[in-house]
Length: 501
Image (tube, rainbow, N blue to C red):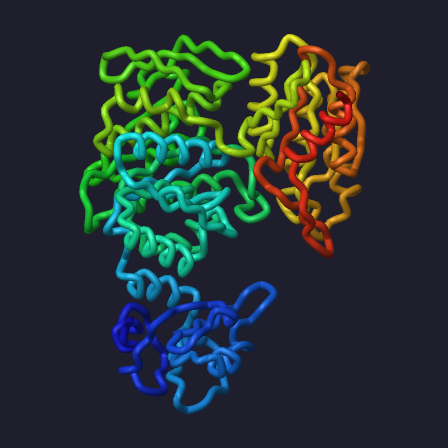
């Protein structure tokens, strides 16, 4: 419960109508969630204007409304006019929930690929050390073992602050959280105080939003500005950066080392504070050595692939800053299971491997196919597509990558959204055909129906081959032009495998 007067002191107001001593019991920007005592914030979205729902919010029990456009509501409803309701929301929401991030240790992980796996490894290490851990990310939010669905990698500011407040009430000590570039630019994490920031990598994605890679990198770097800003409420900060990434310098330059110590990890540069070397892979595990502060350690994990070594290093780095010993961190990662939809093996007793992975960027696809090449003696059969209403520039790039690294490519539909799936596929095939000019024997197929594409890939597989189904990973839906349907690559792969038995 907060008093309206105290709430509006946190933002800049242009005009105020009504009783500032009004008690506010909840805060929301969704008129469907308004209840008696709510403060309703009218947001101007791309498709919906919250001001159109002000009267509805009042009828449902809102006692106060924040607006930037004129609204017509009963006189007993307090109305606060501001220049920008979204900024007002970012100012007021953390205060309404009593700044919950200040009451827990907050580990933030950002990058194009690897955020989800790194987040879950870090959470696993902290849990094994006896902490109660919350997780916020692409797949879900977790409070201990309790799962809470989320709609964005990083929830909008009110939802995020509400979730963090729930974690405080549940006595969570550490929160491991994926922080997307969108959330940083759009203010979703405003009011959060982070303690550890980890950068995984930066590769082409989201250029429909950021326009250039430089803008994309600067967006990610905002996290490191936050974790190293002055006048924070907690001490013991750290920044862990993958030194092998070409954009590492952008993150490094954003760190104020007087506030936040800078640490690096990697596999190519032996000067990295956490340096991994002498790696060995199987289809279901990795072994490697890590040099840390002039000591060498043997690490074993059930995660396959070079990219998962980077994920493990980033997670260990954050855990070290949270007081976990190197020995305990290494012991913890031994029994960490893969994250759903991240190099997830689908086993129905077949004589070849089938892997479902979320790889939906050029770099992600290249890494997953590279891992497949390291662990298989047979052919690589890749099933992939690209999402609609997203960065179009990456489509031919992904086509070229599949053509270069897979023995057989099957181009299919992903989440077409409002676009024509056939048109998206045409963009991808441009890249495949470019490679085919120099590889005339290159074989690929176009099967727009994703279910049929998966069936076809499984039917083509022979002993010791590997089928990589890339792009959707953990998702159990497919977004079409007029509806969203249930669709799970893992289910489809299992069904296809049962049919070929």
